[in-house]
Image 1: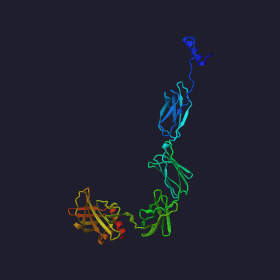
Image 2: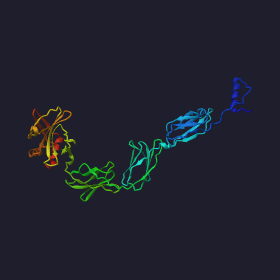
Image 3: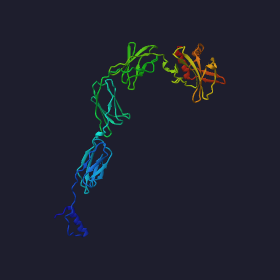
Image 4: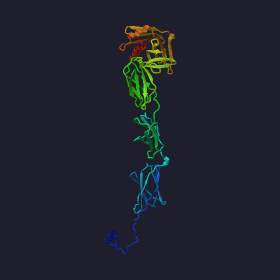
Length: 435
């Protein structure tokens, strides 16, 4: 019988070097060249954490995922289990068997499918009207979103609060909208369908802040985002868009004190808010707090008082209004804080500018005392407006003048100079009062 080439070479080598002359060569030795059957692989879902591979006992199962090959042995039970992390929907997994002789089976390919029981919740599309400039969708934080608006398609993710927002142009009523959430493993929610509806609601009236004064060249305020603010002065109307933050700035010419103007907010659908009336105020109107302290309305200059009515300086002499802004309502506060809790016991107020001096005696019963939890004591005296004081202040309070205030007490004197802020408070408050 003719020997295969590789066997003939083997025998020749044995005869040449080993000196062995075989008397008999068995024909019963065979080589396994039969490949195993293709394995059976369990159908993976996007939530699956293992694959079960069935096939020839003892064969090696080669599993290829994401370009990497993993090997497991088929046990006597006829199966091998491969533990894995959940894979994305659509992921391809290839498995083949290789027996002890190196014969490889055909490849069994499985594709990761969606687990219907673990689909994301359907997103919620907030109402979109023909005046909307923002489209808002609510869903599960971190998940992806595919959104269509008319013929346009957008992709994005819900933020940490589960919100997705997109600025949009004005849309026609009936424009279709769809939204579908997608998990990080590719599972998709139900498709949500809606459409653009008619905006039948007027915007809320705009809020103006700060107040419009005789020095203002614009009306600034807050209103419905993406609407239009319309300011009418006499027969002229000025307009500006409301920004996404809700702020608007409408440019206007300077106006006289007492001038009336109106503010209307118009949305993209043409709905208009109720008309708000604006009155032009004094140039210093915005420099004052307006508070109510235990039933008493107070008007306080912002540079020398905090918004709660407390003074900004430990020792101060400053003007304020008790009640309405008027000459009759103008008063002056003399105040001193003592950290050690010891009162000065006011006896006299002296205000000096150069050689010019204003003096006022203080009766013990006219001084007030407030003790705080930290042990600090505030001693106060209310100076009523009078012609002599007004004349002195108008004549001498200037930014460039050094103004020294002296409080004579029962035991000692306390002296301090007015700051620039305190001097500005005097100048502006007197002008605001009408002096």
